[in-house]
Length: 198
Image 1: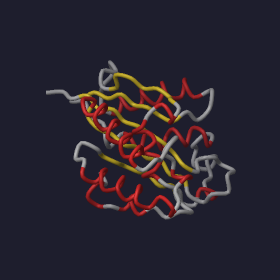
Image 2: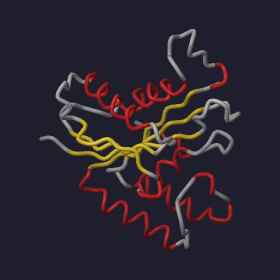
Image 3: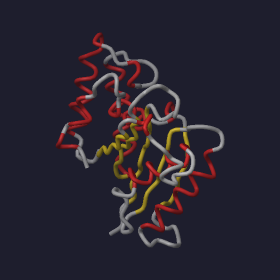
Image 4: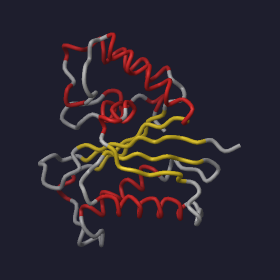
């Protein structure tokens, strides 16, 4: 029987000239039926620790260590939640022209394809949410959807029910993706937890 999943995607250090050597893309996904419960539990954890505002890796500090430990424990205990990350090492050495990759922007969406195509199965359906990158991304997101479906021989695009750019502040689970993904300069132990890597 087909199941519907929501996938929440985020990226870190993806700009070509941001002076960061590593580019990270990641996603958290779970069954659609679990989204309300998981989002409510995440909000409850934030409320208990008086962690107002958006959950972001850039806000992580040792002052809230108990909050982050509870958040990590909750994530590891929730079997409906899954996390996957893609790491591009040594971003400055990329040569898009030589390897016929087009622009860095095209490379960015090719990396999203590499992140997502291992998760998708034509037996299920998916709602995919990507963090807003820029105002021109709508066309590229539609193309990403087309390529993901074609890769699974779903030429009617039934597998991806919905794909959309959203602001991370609109989704608690997208904020969780940001937190788990971390950034290269702040080594993220949660990224390397074997039990949850897919």
